[in-house]
Image 1: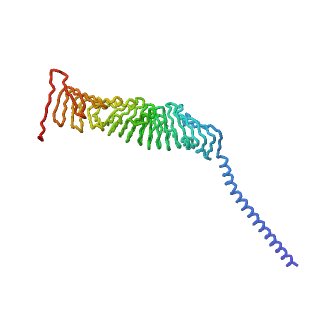
Image 2: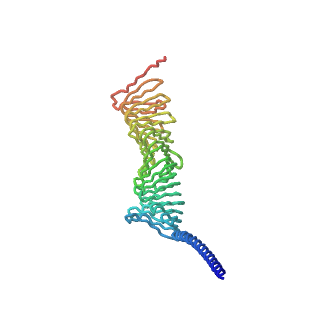
Length: 392
């Protein structure tokens, strides 16, 4: 009986331990599941938090100030979507103003935009329009970047610029709002004076307040009248003064007039493209490339519209076809009729027959050797020297 009671007690204890173990195992499994759920919950909350912090604004006005509290820009957008860290925003239908020293320097408009670095950089894309109200300059492009700290609008794609004085296109460029200076690069084409002047080059600086264009690379200029070219110019350096309608050209100049057919060669000239006047205080060579007449001088003023050229200082005229030469202090040349009038220490030389004439004044044409040399003082005679033909 005692053995039976002992066995029964042992069996009850075993049964209780088994139950207890299963209970502990069950509790452990529940605890594990609860732990897994507890681990998943923070990630879910973080994701929900992130979604909540992605700010979306519709029909909003945005603005940004610098550290001193001065307004940098103020824009209106149809939609602005901010990143969770608020350092970037995507914009649609952008329109507004860019400020500098409290004044509007650019009025901007674009289909799309992006704000970076807490508003210190703005990117605009598609159908961009930027207008400087101070000087009426208009810039169009498909992609630009605005850097307030540098006062710089970087035009990255398909630049189109317009102004009452100039229209220009280029691959890219930079506009400095503080200096109101536009720098252009790549495949530049510009037109001015109601499209009567066209320029082409690869690098150009347009100083808008000074009404000046500076070209420091190979530059081609063409003047038009009724869509027909009247003058062509090629030079390494040129400065266009839009207010004076003048171009100051330096280094390896090739200027060519179509009518009259005269080419100008010099190291420096000033060309008024409205009146077709060329001036130079440097040695100048004028070449009539149809009649083969060349006139050189230390100074020149050429009126292409009137077909008149005035040369001073060490003037020399030469007809290459007839081997006729004339030297004088001053000379006036009618480029249409080929008539010349030379004054001061005149020397005329020709071949076939070979002779020299000296005097104070000469009038005539070099291309057909029709020259009359006279003295201003009637008491002096014209000196004629005839040289015999050495071949006879």
